[in-house]
Amino acid sequence: MFRKDEEDYQLRYIYHTNQHNKAYLIELNLDCYDDLFNSWDGSALDRKELDPELSHFLERASYELPLKDRVELCFYLPESKKDEKMEADSRATIKNNFRMKLFFINQDLKQNSKKIATYILMGITFLITAYLIPESKDLSLLISLLMEGLFVGGWVFLWEAFSIFFFGSRELKDKKKRYFRYLDSNILFKYRE
Picture 1 (cartoon, one colour):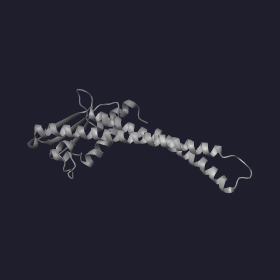
Picture 2 (spheres, helix red, strand yellow; picture 1 turned 120 degrees about the vertical axis):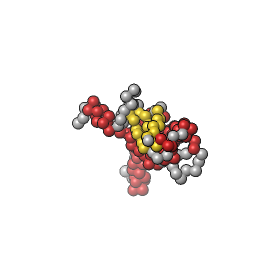
Picture 3 (cartoon, helix red, strand yellow; picture 1 turned 180 degrees about the vertical axis):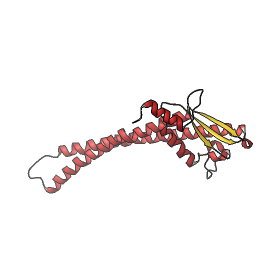
Picture 4 (tube, one colour; picture 1 turned 90 degrees about the vertical axis):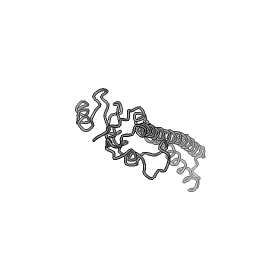
């Protein structure tokens, strides 16, 4: 198993770093600015969605790099395509995409909170109902099955709430941190001849 500094060395071999601030560079070659955005999206530039492959690449890169480290996005384009207005607009659109993703993650977290509250309420209701059914040797098979069903259902609801709280929401919160890191990152455009 790699030690921490060996792992860091391996990552710095895979990803270049900015020598001034030690941020990892996520580098991409483009033919034109439009390569950044979804070609099916007819919205104005400031509302365009990132290209799905680019979005997937950025998400994967974010998980490869330690969350504590800074990252910078570096796009290489042909010198003939240099356009400072498009550069500025593209930066703003990329940042808007990260804000949009954060908005949807926050919506999912709110939805998870509602589900957790509902599942806990249902679980407790099922368990209390099962405990309130009087025990008797004369209980019919149907009542006995109902009691068992209420116990099982109650625990299933509580387990689901536990699962969403500890696993589902945790994953979303981790993704949220990664998008915040991108939102705070520098976006560079460099030109090749």
